[in-house]
Amino acid sequence: MALPTVAIVGRPNVGKSTLFNRIAGERISIVEDVEGVTRDRIYATAEWLNRSFSLIDTGGIDDVDAPFMEQIKHQADIAMTEADVIVFVVSAKEGVTDADEYVAKILYRTHKPVILVVNKVDNPEMKSEIYDFYSLGLGDPYPVSSVHGMGTGDVLDAIINDLPNEGEEEDPDLIKFSLIGRPNVGKSSLINAILGEERVIASPIAGTTRDAIDTTFVDSEGQEYLMIDTAGMRKSGKVYENTEKYSVMRSMRAIDRSDIVLLVINAEEGIRDYDKRIAGFAHEAGKGMIIVVNKWDAIEKDNHTTNQWEANIREEFQFIPYAPIIFVSAVTKQRLNRLPEMIKRISESQNRRISSAVLNEVIMDAVAINPTPTDKGRRLKIFYATQVSVKPPTFVIFVNEEELMHFSYLRFLDNQIRKAFGFEGTPIHLIARKRK
Image: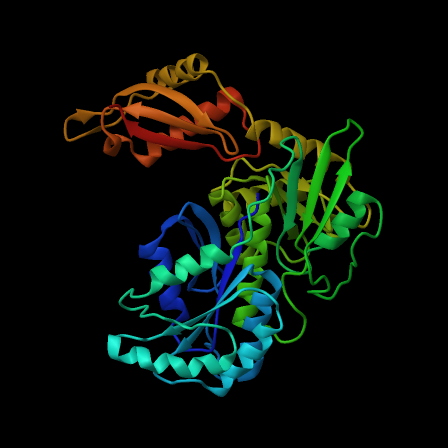
């Protein structure tokens, strides 16, 4: 089930990132904190009072030549499009500014819950400075000092109070997958080709699709799929840093909702850093993955082209060696008929359970092949292992001392488990835990 999203917006230099770091780093437990396309952290999955939500920092302006109001409006657009709750940050030190009023007017029209946070209230005497912000028409302002952490608990309580109610659980047999990737890699065209109809508008202009579109379809064997389209990950026109953050946010939302992610790469353009970033998000989230190289019909090929591409992909995506690679064309529909079957196989891998007896046989055989490491005269002892969850398959390995389990030995055990049980297309998590 997709997590609700909370977006932090406001003009530059009001302390949005400080508030984000304060909430994400100290006041709530981080489930996952990943890096986006910019150098700043912009996305965290967090929990407060037993409610999880996605926290988005929309960032400030780094490019001084960019139109000021255009950037401000874009931040508000992010909130209007994606967020369930909007945290609007202003500064007590500067008071109400024209830019604050501009953002407030836009947010007022969203009809979404807006929590007005007056930041930089660094001492009790400054609380009297917040009353001017009632003029923004967004309800009671919350005085906060992001630097010192004062008032953030009240803001989090307000966020939880405004989050949408948790919905019903989805059909466990439904396989949810999304197509993610840079703009103009052909995601919309692939969706149309898979469905055999013009479900979404396909255009060579990056950013044609503005909103995510979900489509349900059933294959010939009766398996139901939910396809999540994230084509509109960049708006047309000038591209600012915040546009990249918007792109990442859309991708993260899709990854969060998906069981399996299809990372689409444009064969004409090759692999870019953004492709690796977005694949890293899906890997860290424990999602199944397929690397889909689109526009394969547009490439001049010889007998070595496919092998060269596969070798290059494996080199660039070393952290996801489990992800199968498929070369397709949305235009000619080359190999597209193989995608549903691949998705189904990966779903089976994600939900596979291994009995403890069989698992421990594989672990003991692995130790016999490659004995456990030692450190300062102490040897790692593995007592037993058991699978604790699926999606992704997660295994707890009980040992004498957790710190003796080196990451390289965990990687070796990962490889041995994959050799024995497959787990195609899905990450598996191995957790070393000291036996009580």
